[in-house]
Each structure stands twice: as C-alpha cells, then as structure tokens.
Length: 534
Image (cartoon, rainbow, N blue to C red; front, side, top):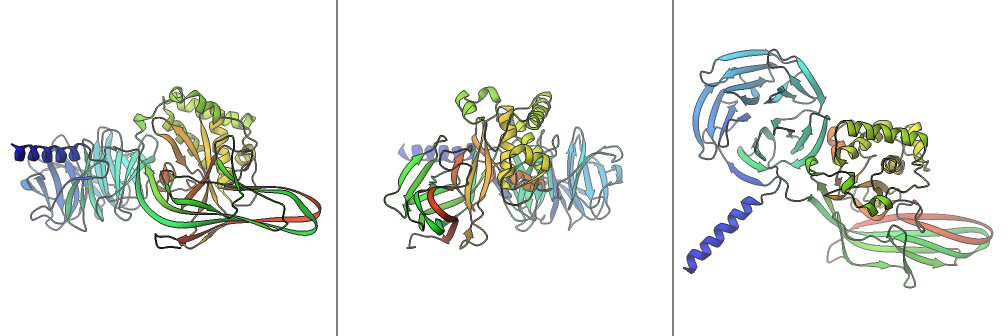
C-alpha cells in the first residue's frame, strides 16, 4: 500500500513538471533513426511531422513520438531548406535553385512551382494569408500561393527556421541560437527566447509548442512557448562596485556647507545586493526624495572631500516575456500610480505644443487600432527611436528641443519618452545606473539611463529608447523589456528630485565664500567579486 502511494506521488510530481513546463523548456527530444540531416520540417498533426533530409533527397512523414517512418516521397530538388503543410500539400523551398514547390502528399506530384522573388529562401511556412518565405540573411516575404507575387516584405536579418502559431510568426536564428516571436502586423520582434540547442536548422509551431531540429546534435525537440513567469534570468555575474565622488577646490575661499548625495541601490529582479552596503563616512545620514529614493547624505565643510559607497552585487541578465493579449488598458492602472508618474518635469515640458501634437497623434493611432497598453508603449518607443538619433554631445536639453533637433543622449532619449508618455497620461519613470564598461574590471564615469513603464498585469517594465536606436529588429526587441548583466540600477525616479535633481546616481549642493573654483569628480570602479574577495 505504501509503495503504491509513493509511486502515485512520484507520478503526480512528474505530471506536474510537464503541466508547468515553462517557455523554452524541452518537452520531448529524440534522434530519428536513419534520418540525420534535416533541413526543413512541417507539422501535419499533433504527433506527425514531415521532414526533409538533404543527404537522401527525400521527404519523410514521421510519428516523432514513436520514431516511426509513415511515408516517404522523393524531394523535388537537392536542397530543401523550408517546408510548410496545408490541406494535404507540402510547400517547399530550395535556396540553391531559388524556387518554391507545391507537392501533393498523396501521390508526390508537383502541382505548382515558381521562382522566389528574393534570394536564398531558407525557411517557409504556410498560413491562410499566403506563403511566408524567409531569406537566409535578410528579408521575410509574404507571397501569393499562385505565383509568388509579393504581398509584404520585412527586413528581419534572415533566419534558419520559420513557423506560425495562428497569430505570430516564429523565426529561428541559428547563428545567435535564438528564436524570435514576430508580429507581421507591426513588422516587429515581440519576444526573444534562447534556442534549445546549437544551430536550429528547421522549425514549426503547434499548440503552444515549437518542434525544431538542432543540426549540430542531430536532435528533434519539442519546446514550450507558453510562459509561466513574467521574466527570465539568462546570465549573471558577481561584482564589487565602488562608487566615488570627489570635491576639488582651488582659489581663495572656503566651503561653508557641502552635501554629496549618493543614490542607494536595492535588490531588484536584475540585481541582488550581497551583504551590507558600506559607506566611507559613518556620520552620513539617509534621506528620501519625493519618489521614495533612498539617498546617502554626506555633509562636509572641507575644500577637499571624498564620499564613497561600496556594494557587492550579483548582476543578472533579465528578459521579460510579454504576452500582448494579457496586457491591460489605462483604466486598469491604479489612479495614484497615474497621478504620481505622469507629472510635469523641468526636462519634460509635457504641455508644450509639439509634445501635445505627438501625444495626440499616437493616442489617435492607438485608439483606431484598438490597442492595449503594450502596443501604446511600443508606439511611443517606436516614435522616439525613429525621430531621435543617438549623439552624446554633453548637456541635457528639454524634450521639445530634443525632438525638434532630432539628436540626443541616453538621458535625452529618456526625457523625450517620458514627456510623450506623461502627455498621453500613462505612467513612466527613469532608472539611472552605473555600467560595467567592457571588462569586469573597469571604470564608468559616463553612466546610463533608460525608462520604465507601468504595464498591468506585469508591473514596471524596462525600456531603453536609446538602446533601441538601431535598424536591427532584434536589437529593438532586446531594448524593450530586457536588462543585461552590466547595468547596476542606483536610482529610480521621475526627475526634479529634492536631492538628486535629474542626476543618474549622485548630486552635490555646495555653499561657499570667496573666489573658489569647485570641480566634481565621480565614477564607478568595478572589480570581480566572490566570497573569498576582501
């Protein structure tokens, strides 16, 4: 009796693991007997798939659960690189002949073929709207079944696998070992997940899962694309950060009262503070600004003064997986959050005529397309990155000047985004950080800033408008909902802080007498850290 109960509990545990499989988890994998060079696949049913084997120039219908070959057909060319299935027919592409074929799976007869409008077709999938074909290195096409006439075209930098889930396309990139969720409505990558194996050469989608083939290990895998968590930890590194602020004075005069304010970080999804934070001055006191930011206040009267903060931190690469259909609307945001994080700011000028015109345009387009907050925030993100080019020239202008000029730094990208969002009436704020610049042992005296938006039911979501200033759809997607393991957040706020003003992570307030020239030096010094570090 006890033995049977134990076996039952083990069975329930195993079943539960399957039931709560998270996005990217491998649900099933196998090596196919006698088939080892798969370059394309298409799903016929829950258990049956068609695959193309380039070594044998053949097409196989396989039950991948039992690893049994059900049918074999000759391939119409020597190198099938893409495949889709619909209504008893396989659509195939050959990147060397640059052709697309339609073959009847009942008798193997080729019923249609045409020249591909692009170059090197490397993947294919079939939808009710037409045939999607992906080039090896550049464009994604939607083509008419009859003769391959182009309906749509997007530059996605190519790929090695292509599938369709009924709403979104999924693209495998075998060079980066990533899989992208792509919206053909907006022409944007929505989410990125790590590939389950090296060099994915074929991909298809079925019921919240992807069937794909890892060409390096010759394995057919089924992975989940149904997220169970809001975000995922992809990498981490433990480091020590010494943040140092120095006051240098020259001339005939004296400092009467001085304050160095240093923003105090705390643990967040992308960072875990290890142990206690150390400060150079035991007489330092803590203060808080109107945004709830904790700040170390170092008071001094010396003409030469240094304040420092030492933090051991586990920095993490965090990637949010946002399901657009789960996202809510403005009415679902708490009123106090809207009131607090849509305020005017001295760098924003949200009531400026230009800002209001941009905000009204974005609101109108979003309403006409019946979009929720996810798509509204992406419209703001898209507008800023398309209308501002990155240029680090020093100094911070106000948002209307930045948007009219068309260039700006990371802070100015953030000001522009905040101004538009606040004018629309959706909550957003900024995060200031110390960056790991290059090697883990490095110095940062430039710092970095991006924005957060409030997106129910996910909460605060990071968006880096300046990081998204790129023609790469992948890079645009990475900067909407991802933080790398090089960003150490010290400051969260909305500007005009009582102590920090608009600074990334520190500020000074110095009163003096006489002819005195005061210079401020600040930087973050990084070193690798482990439990044995001193």
